[in-house]
Amino acid sequence: MVNNFNTPVDNRYSFELYKSNVCHKLKKLGDIEFLIETLNNDDILIYYEKQWYPECLYLLAMVDYISRENGIELCEDYNDLRRRKLSETIYPASVLALCVANKSDLPKRQAYREAIPEFIRFNIVESDVRNVN
Image (cartoon, rainbow, N blue to C red; front, side):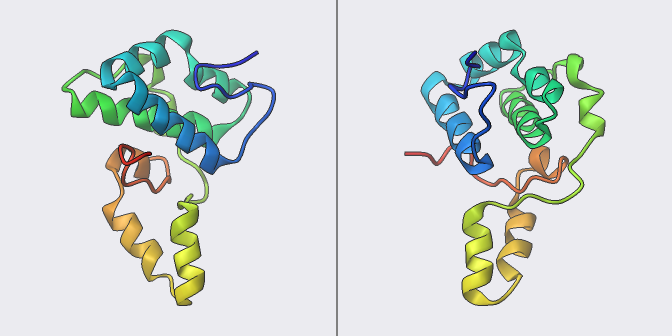
């Protein structure tokens, strides 16, 4: 079985690859079609039921962010999930690499401050979902 983001549901890819796939899908479909497909396919609950919480909450954050950007009311089906968050903050691999290279946590702190609120709510640091090639 394959979900809407071309990720085999039974094979879990790295979170970085998953995020990239979601961002590319957003770019390809555009905001409204992305929302329609994501909500119709119920990918958020598919990930939740598999206990793939980072993927579930990343996708919900993306839906909420795109909804806010377009002045669309939030889908109330996920209100229960909106009360949850990951126990540890997830940072982009690039930020973690900068921390190692600089021997400093400054890149993490800066990335956290610049993160999109819908993602931070779930302890996911994400700042630019539209800058994909």
